[in-house]
Length: 418
Ligand SMILES: [Zn+2]
Image (cartoon, rainbow, N blue to C red):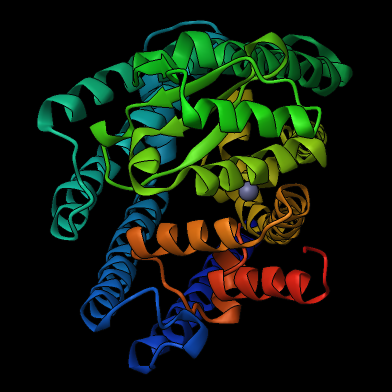
């Protein structure tokens, strides 16, 4: 009979697989359907067929990769991989923090190694087949090396700090840790646009011209100070396009993918940025940050309760308690709850997206450019235009296209615009 904690984790994993597979099957039913009339102008027959193929390929790929990951995890767990690894890291006779970094480092490296073939397949087979991939092997390998170094440079001090707090700081460790982790995260977010992101992409200030003037004049009209508009070479990796804001304070910048500029007219680009600025104006970015900080605090507090709980170590066949072991096992135990948390966050995000859409059309006083931009984006990215509502509930951070267009049309019907 497995340990009760093991049983809880296994049941949670089983439910998770069941729910996600069910959602996938419901979502795939659209493969048999015709497009609704409002979306007929987005795809021609051939293009629509291609988007359905894309959905089917990705769903099947997701099944194979997550099935494989689950199998490896169960084999490692019940093959007593955790105590074996623990013994090995102890053989170096280091202090608890260094031993812990080794333990967590090896697990992270194994995870990265196992996911690598899937990453390669996803990029060089699936994305390639559908014409999205523009990553060369050289870029891929450089990304891998840079990403690994960055992961170690940022991850090791963070993990070391957490282990040290919980090892030596007593009952209030979670609180000190919370403050430290929050400062660390804010620091990384602050320097990311200038120190980290340029490691991977080129950012060139947008040339003066029609687009730049249009963006600046819109920004002025909503009293949104913008100094930095950058174009990013997104085409280096993928044909898919995007726009985003990054950093805060002095380092805040608007970033447009070069691929986005290629595909859209000036009013459409302004509409897309108006949506992004809407996120700022409606304080979504700030609220998301605060929510993240609160979540970290709750997690660390829960962790402080579980870290010394013998049952957690028994479930993973560990004879010796340790902070680093507690950290890993707590993360595993918590992950089903994380899925549930994620559902709330995604619902909240969809609400914010609707609000940013509304902000964009209310301030540009014309829903047409945003509607056409959304349509072009969806068509270009081969989006599934009619996802199943249950699938949306589980996975979507943005409302589906039809829902967004309908909402924008309704605003116009209400007579909000001349
Ligand atoms: Zn948005």
